[in-house]
Length: 189
Length: 294
Image 1 (cartoon, each protein chain N blue to C red):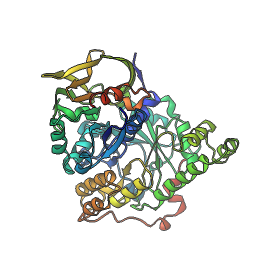
Image 2: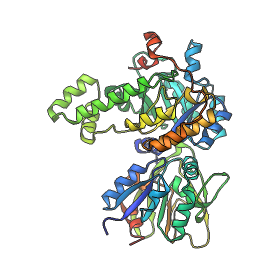
Image 3: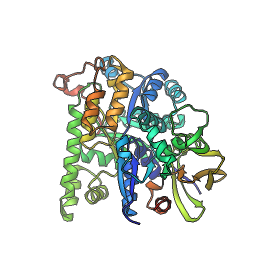
Image 4: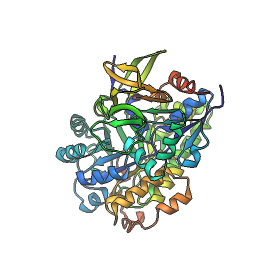
């Protein structure tokens, strides 16, 4: 299982934290800033950060279409927080650049501003309870098609999978818990 | 179960800002220009540091109306500054729902001995530091993010470079000391011993460290990133330049592609006039903002 080459989109945000977690899982993290770097990877993580910033940089440096076509070929992609927003086909009440890949509607800053940011323990389908950090986090208002909700916080959907695509509203990379990184790595061989 | 205002949540937002540019803005229109250019956050102010420097007098927290209008104008995080030691300005900013407070030497200090006890707040704080001891004192007081002080409002990167090099030098020094010498190092730096132990073990600050104070060009931003900063604050450098929009976009791109000189060469072209700037040697010692805070 070791040695999977996993790209981490390194335009802006907490990409180093994902690299550290991937190393601890035995995978090989690769920073991705250009479309050439995209060709070297088997899977991609879009980290937390500012979704508007990351979206603009993806557009400016020509990454949107190459990522979309890799996704269509079946490459696994996992978005955390900003990454979840960038994967959603619908972003509620805002207009911004995104990949528009997953059948879900996501609301930004849905739990409130920074002073409402929180830590909790989540129940996740098929995994042990996980410590979760939510920072100005989005939640998923609805899903359709093949998208499936894997976790709720109170009555809000915060983790969704659709075939090769995974999205979490929270940040497993800020905790010691590697279960969700392992889950993502198990999505491909 | 839900825990808010934890240190992890406070440092977590700073981690999400990494690799990004936080821009000083004084109006909702400027905030929207900054957001459109790709800023990862904005700092809401009444005046940018260059104008504070020019105006003289006492510089205070911004009027809450300005802060609120800027918060309404953008979806990215909004920061605001309080005076060093002015914990009531900090309480007011927290009550407004601001996302981060900068306890800043750009404003006139309210206390010449003590900084704000930042542990008492749910909102996270960023503070300036010229060296490791100062950074660890601020973290000891509860700061969840550090930045270089540089010399604000000058468009001159030399002081920010001095400060990041100093912090890095001292981290390397600490990391190479035998354990029995760390208590004395803590004493010499005036830094909390527990944090000195943590730096020695991890060979890094326990929180994110941004560059601030004098960054005016994409090359300045990339320089600070290559020197090991986690991200960039630009104060006067954008809205005191000839073409703020283009310059803001270029500094954002330079902060991402800080190691790619071909991209840096491309994005540095035709940006119009940079802010004119001030040579540090011409600023009288009593006018140096970096010497505020202790």
